[in-house]
Amino acid sequence: MTQKIGNVILEVKNISLRFGGVKALTDISFDVREHEVRAIIGPNGAGKSSMLNCINGVYTPQEGLITFRGQTFDHMNSRQVAEMGIARTFQNLALFKGMSVIDNIMSGRNLKIKSNILMQALRIGPAQREEEQHRAFVEHIIDFLEIQAFRKTPVGQLPYGLQKRVDLGRALAMEPQVLLLDEPMAGMNLEEKQDMCRFILDVNDEFGTTVVLIEHDMGVVMDISDRVVVLDYGKKIGDGSPDEVRNNEEVISAYLGTSH
Image (cartoon, rainbow, N blue to C red; front, side, top):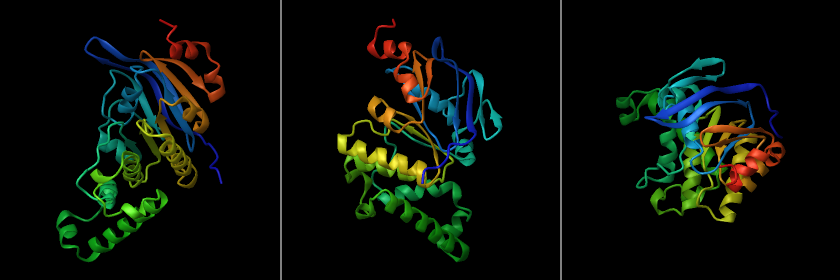
């Protein structure tokens, strides 16, 4: 059963970001609604990853505000953003390659652990019960992502497409309200892309998670997104349904390289 798209959960207002004299983003505004799949697209260098980095606290924009569930902030660090309920995967995998699949995904439970380090190390009383609960949750994610056969395998030994699934699993372990995906299908073959599309839609449907994704594959974007915002040279040039964006002359020009 598909979750009904709800009210605005995340709003980006007039965000501008500069690195020295270089403008990465200029006066960007858009919103994200509960339970939707919201895509951010644009040619290389358009500012898409910079936009995600502003949302999850990696970069602090010089201008503008971000509102999440009615709480407005102009700067937050990544941990604060994660604690609020926004998780992130990265274009370049940042997994612990020598650790097993289950331990990588368990690392996503870090913010949820209440026991102190000593109790965790000794695995006594409440700490042991808590760990068992976290492991049960992680096992559910492993089943959901269909990677049961690789639970104990060091992540570095897995093919790239499966490593991307583990990265998604670690983000899901944080139980995010909003999941930011930075090119989740980059470098994948057709079959791996189809699998990842299915998992993203299932995450959105079964977990009720709002998804914001950057993706270069326009076919994928048009198939799975509810709304699309288009950036080019750090400016917003389109925003709307996939059909509206597909027929936007400025967007067509940007992708065909005829606008400059």
